[in-house]
Image (cartoon, rainbow, N blue to C red; front, top):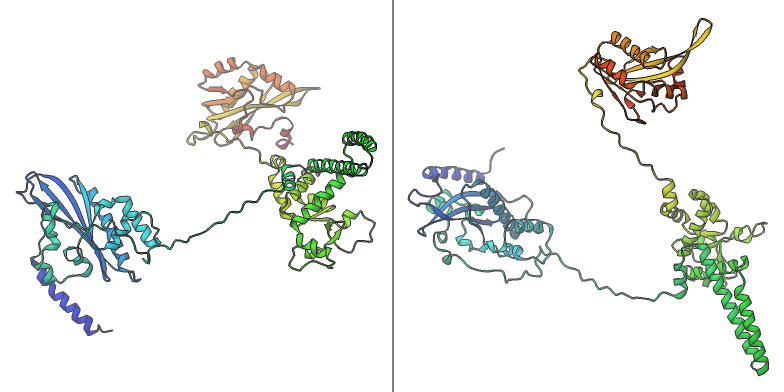
Length: 581
């Protein structure tokens, strides 16, 4: 594949111009020899961008005690524009973010302390983005703006004209001839060599961002209208109770008082014709009220209260369905969530339909009352049935509920009741697990011979034939704490001397032991009483003194302490039959 003539000519022209850079020199020192000690050091960063690329160039401005100024080139960085086309303000912002990154690097690398850093940009859009702190930008601009604001102050950013910006050479490119003829890239702009009063001072702080700027997020205005409605007294009464039985009792008392008041009004209307009869009726009604109030709530009162509650709740949850059935419709709309239940209206209560009208079952079981899942009364009923069933499972609770009520989406409602039940959470809670302690040092030493660190324990008794008599013998088990190896010895009794003899036979057979660990005998909870009491009679002090002569250290576990490092190899009581059939 051949290179096109246009590209070939450009390449030839560029390679030919490289010969003009033979005389290019850069001083390795930041200042001249006769400049003296600098008293003020400033770093100036210039950034610029174009469609071809973006870059930044940095200079060190030093001032000595006599007020003389010297400007030295520090570093220049340029990057080509990304393949995905970006707007010029975004590239200018990327160049500004690059200058901040270079500033952080120079502050760490330069040996002399710098008094301040000044950032120059010829993009008013970038300066507006940086100085703005109340407008929301899109992600690209927001990320780079926040990065700049975290590392710099708004007062450090200044505006410079494009013609005086040395970073324009790295963003647009420059020929070798022009680069050698104009020393601006190395020596910096001319105003840096002057006093600060001669610097460009064009402010853009007071210039607001345009509303149609593509980088500004459009803010949506949301108008909220709040409408407060007072809670009905009946709803307030229902929501006040957290128990189904207490709610029914309260409503039953209200209905009883209602009936009493109606009776009083009726008697008063009938006795208006005669004053003597009015006085007599008044005395009779007072007695009737006292007797009626003193009566206890009966089962019939609770049933009437329950019907009143269900009727009120259904009128709130299913008003359209009840109106259609009262008008004589055979069924409700298909869009209703209880359409498949074939609802019917029975004495003002909405019930489940079906084909069980002729069965010899109670009416509430053939046609349960329909309730909405999200109503407070449905929650009270589910809690009541859940407690009656002994906090059982979901299926058991639903089977009891559906004998009288049909709650829509009862599965999810019952799961919610069970998950929030405190008693169920306690019963099904996972018991806490004790974190095990670190392993003892004796179990972790791997470079010692077997039975260097051992655990000792007794088991038995075992009945042994001696002549015509039967005697008791006991087993002494030695367990290597590192390798789990097991050694068995016979103790002829449970006295101290028999224990010492068993240990001496073990040492003669297995070699010198460094550390023996045992308990006080109280950890043998399942052993026979004789074994427990006999182990306590061992003279531990005498055993310890006898083993000191052999160079063996003996330590005892605290009482009731579990010893897991040798219990796996210890056959207590009847467990011996697993090893010795």
